Image (cartoon, rainbow, N blue to C red; front, side, top):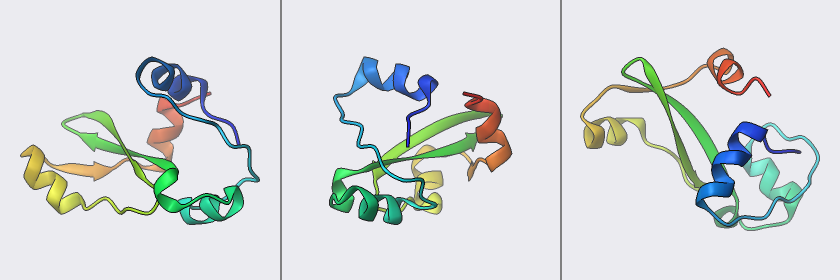
Length: 92
């Protein structure tokens, strides 16, 4: 699995990380298994729609994002971006 060049460019400016090659998977749980790492050692990205724009939450693969709690914290409606929206944002 590769990292989107758009995402990699952002990550290279802000965090230290390792890329672990693995077979394609359909969930972060399966990616953890394929990479043979603990769930809290793998970061997953969740793209969210907010006020006509987008934001990304990065969290450990072993965690869940609670949209209702995030909405309360931000004071704005937040929803998961669709696969089509993500494809447009990351056309690479």
